[in-house]
Length: 242
Length: 198
Image 1 (cartoon, chains in turn brown, red):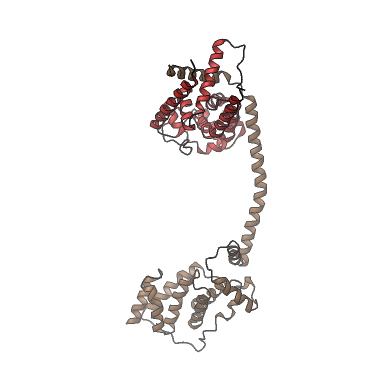
Image 2 (image 1 turned 180 degrees about the vertical axis):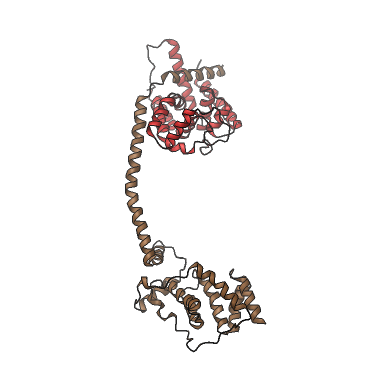
């Protein structure tokens, strides 16, 4: 009985709804109007978004050209409460407050490029060869030479790193480079490039003939604890132990 | 309701898309309003009939039809020629139905409480009146079903589609369609017997 009723009701619903469909002109007009409105809304949105995007792009390009981009990113990171180096802002603030700003951002040394970084292993391998391995400390090698002007830059850590890098790989002034790496590591002990700086510091010690300290500095790398240049560090330690 | 799998079911196409339809689909994908108009002219009756059967309310059905065709250009990004355009439109209607079914159900419940159920045309012959009453009775019974079961019942029983086609539209396996239909019928029988209709 209920089955029959269900079937009859189903048939009735089918027939009722088949019969009632009109020509739908009103809904068609509504659809077309909605599509048009949607198009207008999209255009309006674009008219707002495109200039904003253009300003952002131009601002980023300007920042990159003048070298202020990292500082801006850092400031933005601090503004939104995110900082990967919690202990650094104090150091930066302190150094910025105690020394006058001399150099403009555009005068800042070029940051180490990936090419420079790639060049390092070649030199390290050269160090590991039996050729003149150890350099005597030069009279000008005073630890305080390199970092003295680093605080004059806005991006203190980055500039410290660049100065040390320049002394190490361009000037080959290992005493100055050692002082530079120490200064960088003091300013940013957990900085983005701290591992590289520690390794380069070890190389400087090696170059300066401070074998015991070099061995000590290289051991964490050779053991794989640092996850960086393990093979090279092992080779260097082998050379030192001969 | 599985919406994600609804439109991209890997099942084989039930109907081969015609050449014209393919051209139309390409124009729809580029958001050509004239193409939407053409699709509307070709398929609005089928979509409206389904919407009416599903929501049980002419005004809500019109709203649903409107929504389906407005959403069509964007939805075309997901169209893979695995089903006919009409089936695809029905699947869009299913995806947008929840809100309309809910509001139509609320409206019916309110009108029923206030005894404002619209009367049929008194000029209709007795048979037509009886048909109207039965359709109205089933629509009220459908209000008691979960949306998935409601959609399945309307597609399988009222629209008389195959379980395979319903599976394609709703994006669930055929077994699930049959299970839902079984539960829907069981519940509807209970509802109709409670109404005490002779």
